[in-house]
Length: 73
Image 1 (cartoon, rainbow, N blue to C red):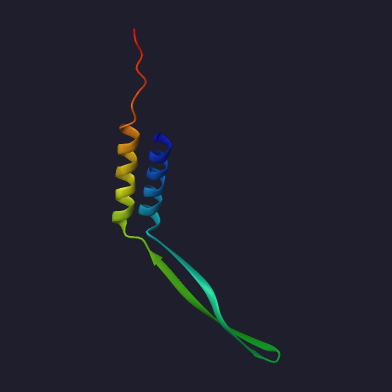
Image 2 (cartoon, rainbow, N blue to C red; image 1 turned 90 degrees about the vertical axis):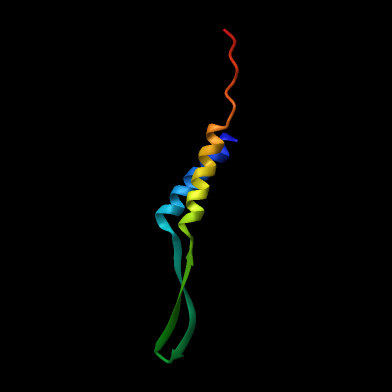
């Protein structure tokens, strides 16, 4: 459970820093003999900061809620 908490904290920090992903995909190509024209399309996947904050808080709770081993003295 501690490992999952650490992963959630890391993903939450990354989500808060980047807040989205953008990439370009070639859409169509027109070949005019010796020349070629390629049209590119921009895509953006936005990630709300609330999701990053929720992941960060849940990860911290999972790390802190992990039971400690009981040592008898």
